[in-house]
Length: 217
Ligand code: SF4
Image (cartoon, rainbow, N blue to C red):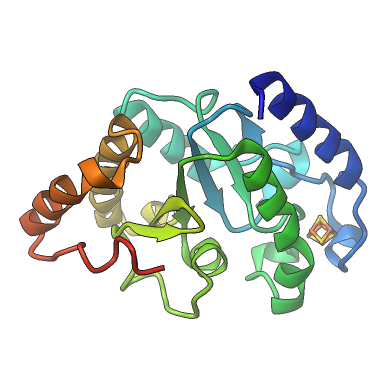
């Protein structure tokens, strides 16, 4: 797809779904949060759902967790205008409760369409819900975090949600380490032939091997 087409397609898709009423969250949202960044990004970062600030502003990751995400992106020499940031749900669950199963089922097709249009080589799933949707698994984030999977021709790397670092500062270091690996994925061009040894090397530093994960899906 031509780059110009990607931008136009994404804009058309936004206009098509911005007034969605497919689930109950349409009744309680302030603003629909489509996501933001570059339509030409090689990497997408996918969170769970808009929070209070996102709901008020209609933008993804603009609260405290957004500041952490910005600093992590900065730490690997990139910024949110070079990536695309989205959520599984486009509308805020009241009180920031967890997304419901039916809400995810209603909304996840929009995320899949965004991925189809942007066509990133790497998807970084932030937290349990986006990881389970993108890897089509019911496993928790703890056992998947920091590993690299291949799903539908793309690399998928689950990490903790940046909000986790707000309440547990030690998780910030884990996020920093995971972002270093994301940088390596980006620099490799997501070429799994090139990546395989590098990933093993990096995983061996942490005492694990990732070879099984690559190609698992
Ligand atoms: S959460 Fe998704 S499916 Fe539900 S109303 Fe919002 S856009 Fe539509």
